[in-house]
Image (cartoon, rainbow, N blue to C red; front, top):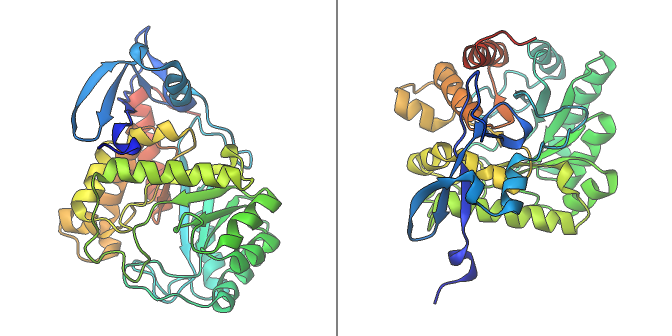
Length: 343
C-alpha cells in the first residue's frame, strides 16, 4: 500500500534565461529566470515534461509569485550571503576571524555582501557541540562591534540555540540561520515568532558529529523537499509567517557526493515551497572531490561554478566565502544572460 507521500506529485519548473522571453513564459518567483515547461516528478515513476499551462493553478501561482522582501532585501535579483566564522575549527577558515577585531576586519572585506552570516559553532562533519555560553561569547561581541562601527548590511546569526540567537538579536542581528531547521532547540522557534525574526530553515540528516556516517534516502530530492515543506508548515503553526522563512536544502549536511549532485541538478523544484531559496555549497568537500582540490581554500573556482548554476535555477541567495569574486562572477553572468549591463 502506498503512503500518502508516495502518491504526491511534484512540479519542477525548467528555468531559462535570455534577453527574449516567449509569450507563454512565466517569471519564476518574480526573479530573473522564466519557464514554459515543468518536470513532473513522482516516486517510483519516470519523470515527464509538460507545459506549465497544464499544471494546477495553485501550483503555478506558488511558482510565479514574487517572494516577500526580508529586511528590505527584495529577491528579484541574486543576493549574496557572506560567511564569517568566528570559530577556531571551521572546515575552511577556522581561526581566521576568531578574535573580534579580526572578525570586524573580515567583515570589511565582505562589504559587497547583502547578508553577513556570523557563526560561532563549527558545523563541519565530525564537529562537537559547544556550550551556549561559549558560542554567545564568540558571536555577540562581533555583532555589537559591527553595529557600533556603522555596518548597515543585514546580519544573520548561524546558530541552533535560542540563548545564542537571543544574545545575537540583542546585539543587532536580523535573521536566524539554523542548520537544524529549528529542531535542535524548541525554544528557538518560540523566540523567532515572538520577535518576528526571519529564519533560514535548512535540511540536515543527523547532527554535525554523525551526519556523514553513511547517509541514506529513499529519494534524496523528494525526501529533502518533503522535510522542508513539513518544517515550514510547523513553523507557521508556531507563529512564524511564511514571509519570514527562507529554505536551504543543506548541501553537504548528511549527503554523499551523489546526493549533493541530485539536489543541485534539480534545485528549481524547491521553488514549490513558496519561499526564497538559499544555497550554501561554498568550498564544500564534493567540490574538492570533483575538482581534485584537497585544500578548501583552493575550491573558489568550483564554488563560483556551483553558485552560478544555482542562479540558473533561480536560487535567490548564495552563501559564500569568496564575496568579491562571487560579486564579479554574478555581474558578468547577469550581463551575458541579459545581453546588457545591470545597474
